[in-house]
Length: 105
Image 1 (cartoon, helix red, strand yellow):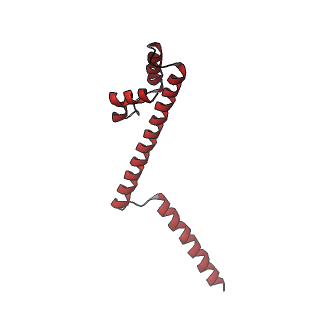
Image 2 (tube, helix red, strand yellow):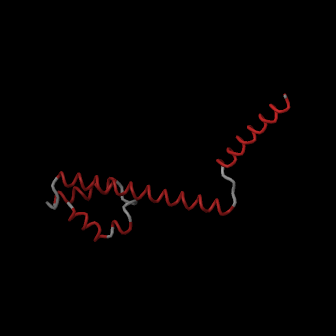
Image 3 (cartoon, one colour):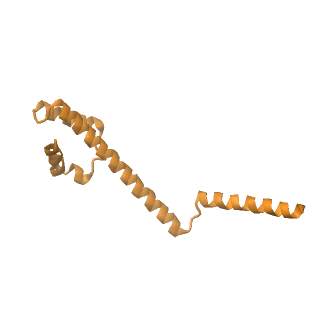
């Protein structure tokens, strides 16, 4: 099985990323390899599972990088985040309650 993953790597699929691969294409490739006798059914299933898991990992990594980049860009630009506004609103409400309590005394 690791020989198959090595072939994928040599083919450049992991180099360019497996994000663009669809489950259908991966299963199609696996079926071709089974027909050629290069994989048995269990190895084919494992190959599909491994590739799809790698794809999910790459998608998550890409999303995380994009989110980090957007967050950094927003922080550097001085744009106020929704969470910042919400935190300030809570502080203002607390101060208003404190002031109202002091007035009543």
